[in-house]
Length: 171
Image (cartoon, rainbow, N blue to C red):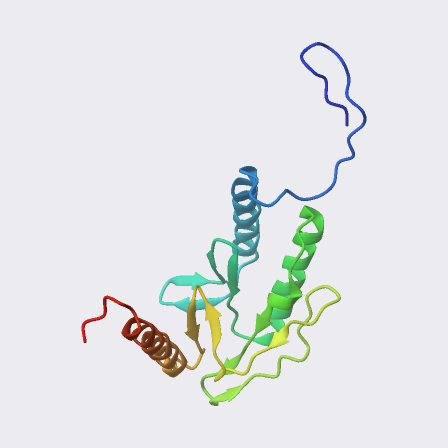
């Protein structure tokens, strides 16, 4: 690509690369376009968890996404769909941050997720009773908020300890 200056002079060739610089004002806009296109594709694909008349297969906030399915086979199909879209769109998935968990609520046991693949990678498997951090909250899919309570308690005690050493702390 060449840039043409106001005086009509051409610049040296500037190679184009994929991606944006950190802090670029276009980043959230382009990110939103990609996320919305992904959500539309997954909505069109169908499936997910149903609550009454509402069927949900994705939960998203900013760049955090959660796919919800009723079985491992459907999740693998969805992961293949996400991978295909990401390859087409030039989006890279951070496998270091990609986690999966599954639980059979009827039989009260974890699902075998070893067959799940995302492209050539294998997402990290988290047991249903182990916490994951989603939107800053420690959650488990078995509805155990013990980890979040313990985390909040620890942070609160740390703050209290720091405040007791502060010169304005009432004795």
